Amino acid sequence: MSEKSLAAQLKEELFINRKNGALLMSDEEIRKADEFSEGYKRFINIGKTERLCVKEAIRLAKENGFEEFVPGKKYNAGDRVYVNNRGKALMLAVMGKKGVKEGVKLAIAHVDSPRLDLKPNPMYEASDLALFKTHYYGGIKKYQWTAIPLALHGTVLCKGGRMVDVSIGENEDEPCFCVTDLLPHLGREQMQKTGSKIIEGENLNILIGSRPFRDDKESELVKLNILKILKDKYNIKECDFLTSELEAVPAFKARDIGFDRSMIGAYGHDDRVCAYPALMAALGAKTPENTVISVLTDKEETGSDGNTGMQSKYMMFFIKDLAMAEGCEVHHVLHKSKCLSADVNAAFDPTYSSAYEANNSSYINNGVVITKYTGSGGKGGTNDASAEFMSEIREMLDNGKVIWQIGELGKVDGGGGGTIAKYVANLDVDTVDLGVPVLSMHAPYEIISKIDIYMAFRAFEEFYK
Ligand code: MN
Ligand code: MN
Image 1 (cartoon, rainbow, N blue to C red):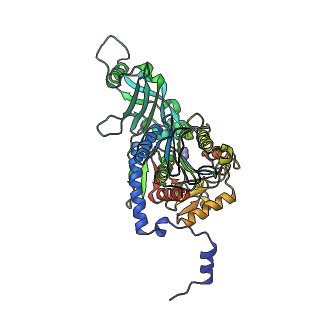
Image 2: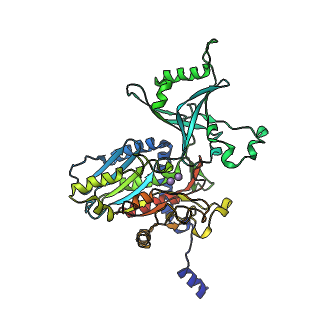
Image 3: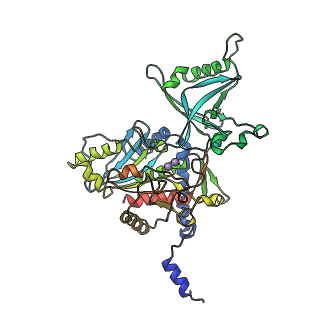
């Protein structure tokens, strides 16, 4: 038998030892990760938009004993409530033994993802084709959104307030839609352009029809024919688009990736891959010490502005309601509160390694990633979690046997980005980003690891104990 050398022993003791989570987990744990991922795949196949995620989350919450929150009502430890913010954001709380006076525990993820929104007056006809004008939502590489099947989801309010839910293009027997691109044969001029100009924003026009209404006297008969179909199907008119929110999203279903089925490819992992574990942790919370609140928020991809985004005060007002019920001040509750800002980070991609700094990147399968800070230009515009809070989270993860890693968003001055962490930290809450590494983030088809999403769930579960 060979003894380990002193150097080998010291290295094991002193170095950070990175390991693929699959080497640290039992077969049973890996099986649990795979099983958890099946539930997640169902969730993102349904939750293609923030509204659909909130709807599905409420359905699951009700199944698990959550009731709509009533301000002023007396709640006891173990009670489960939810607050639906305009159908686009959701808060789920499980009342703790200590109530809220010792602070609440927050896990906040966002359920909006990059996509193509229809313009208020979207429909037009050109050269016998009917199309929708779009305005893209969030940070996208515009060229990635051409020549892929798109589904359309959203809500139309007709004159008089009648509400029509539109959802078309996900099922095989339904039509879907598409943004066209120029053929390479004629793309010589296009391919000389810089990436951001290859497809321009005003070129993201969605093809929706080509057959004219049969009448040889009128013009715009293809558009007319589509409007006739929409009238028959939904009873809506062109002016109703003005009072609608319609979102075009990739029509792909979540699929396992790799011969080993270790990963999942899907649209919208950012940030439903954190929203689902945060939701599941809330549903699984029994009677926690502190009150726990999972928030599925909206508008993160456009800067968190608006009344369903984290720059609004909707979450603070909810915590204020809980504080008032116990006769305490909300700012005292917030000061003692802790938050895991549950958002994704960029997984190291060997094909684009120069965009990363290998020692401070997150890796597929290495577990949930803690991101101390995000931002750009010398940590501009970010929460920077304190050493003390980082230490608390590290202890919690280690004690709970959660596999975790650290990660920065790419190399210094390589670009940057932000999360909702700073808006929560600005409320005087200890906050750190913790989430799942993603490959091809913000592409129509993103990739995550089954082990990593499961470890995110385990992290929230430990946090909520
Ligand atoms: Mn995100
Ligand atoms: Mn994002």
